Image (tube, rainbow over all chains, first blue to last red; front, side, top):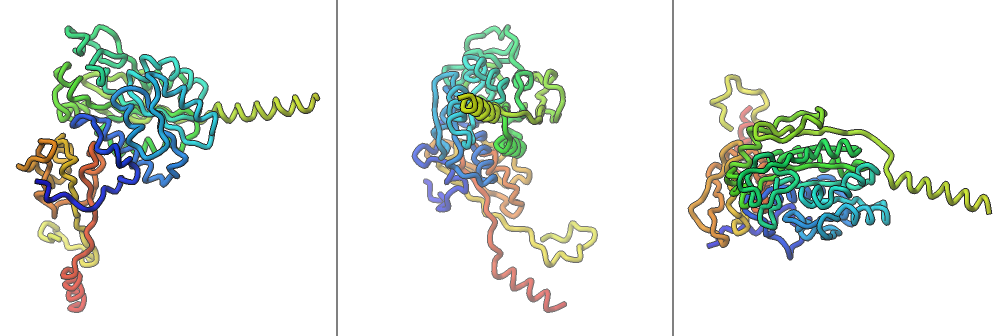
Length: 283
Length: 104
């Protein structure tokens, strides 16, 4: 049976929780690759794991908080960003990373996202975009492509999807990137860059959902998704995010925004110090 | 190192060696997505006949000498089931290399 099983542990094992791995994601699910890239980024950066907080919402990718061997928090549906903002403001030294899905971050949590980006709060948001609500049975979501079939749109979706990179860039994020799970190296580099950056960073990762969305939309297996990504993705670094809509023919990927802006927590500290100085000076 | 394909032998070919890879599989973790097999740039892996505890066919190493330790299989594997290590140089080879150097 399993006589060939190797005795040597996987090099990323220290970054994963032994009690929860192997994970429960479907065969070929992009979430596993995102977890792999994320922990690889942590390993390559040689960061202190006690200074990392992973926060996730509800959805398939929400389980990532339980798989990373860091401080982590699995929050309520749509609210990973408010929890993350609380963590970041309470302890600005922590590197707070939100990893969640498209339905969680942009449907129920859409308002939290745009306002956290507008305030430029120093959290990092990694969004796994699988085009539907995979965990609950493949309902149509805010990123489902037009005319695509899902469990709740059996004749085709009639709603226009979000262009997430444009939304993040327009809301004021200082770092915006999009990759697919096929671009593992670039995704890892992007995650490293986001972790080192101050301010609100957003990375969208287009991810296959072979078991749920793949079957409903008739895209097919995990390999069909990957071949689609391979064929359709075009690297367009610093191109106009407004033009970066995902279609069946073209998936524009790359880094779209990389600017510097004072962060909310820095301005908050300065304002607090200034106000305290005024109060004590007047008394 | 195959010198047949080179039209001109590099001067320092004796000094450099292509590192040998040791491809480690944790077979019972594999869910059979096939990414490592499909996206290996050197076609090192192939689907095996055996069935693991999850009821899928894990990959098997068919061309270990072709592997250049790019690590793409390790990076793309969603299940942490494959990783590549560099084999330490075997003694025989080092002896041969020493002999070659002495001849010169």
